[in-house]
Length: 340
Image 1 (cartoon, rainbow, N blue to C red):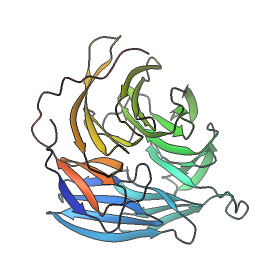
Image 2 (cartoon, rainbow, N blue to C red):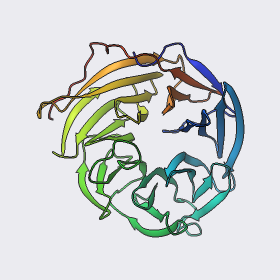
Image 3 (cartoon, rainbow, N blue to C red):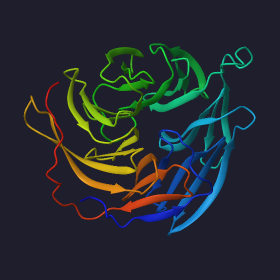
Image 4 (cartoon, rainbow, N blue to C red):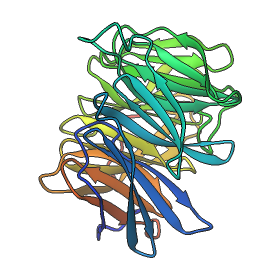
């Protein structure tokens, strides 16, 4: 079991709103601090944990313009920044709260009844900040030119839910790619160099709320409670696990690419051990290594934060931390992991 069931609690400044992926975290090993950002209504809060003490700061308020849909840390050129995506606006700030960009949607003045909202955030090497929209487009900003807009990307027919890049973490593939999902369940895999979609995945018919790359594999978590894995090399689905009884709201992969965490509306947090197998027909083993239930709390965000697993709960002023422990043999439950 990779984490202790004896959970710790971190006090938050406000309760987390009912949104998928409503938690982002960055760990500073040198300072031994972990910073979390989360959304409460139209406000983005940052809570920093150091020596078991919390400090809070209000980062951004979009109450004049509508709701906030996602807030996320991104590490760009070795420096963290915070991206806030909401109705009509994208705000990029430093971790100190200084506004770098306040980007309005193109239809700010023209579509009062159906304004654009932004959701889905990722950075793709060498220079692209990606943000999804409710119109199915992906906005691109150039981090090397003061976050100026580049041509938008088109391919989805309904609101985008999330975006993931294989250049964000430590398990980078030789071919830079990113993936986007929408409310209909469609996943598009894009070639980062050409900014063109190379694979349209239609395995799900419900919103795909979570995406994460691990080497040659793309993992997804959807509103049916299913986890799926797709091989970028063979362009086939290689694994399905009916993991949660209700919608998966967020997924995360640890920096070494050995653990996948999922949380859902069934109040469960699950951690899966990912192990490669030297068999082209069975490219991975996927074992359930840790499970926790947070009673009567829909879970809406999950992050690996230093040596802990952090979980956010809807309508709760507490963040739940599961500290790590020495690895043990995983439980015998193994998900289906062959070609589909």
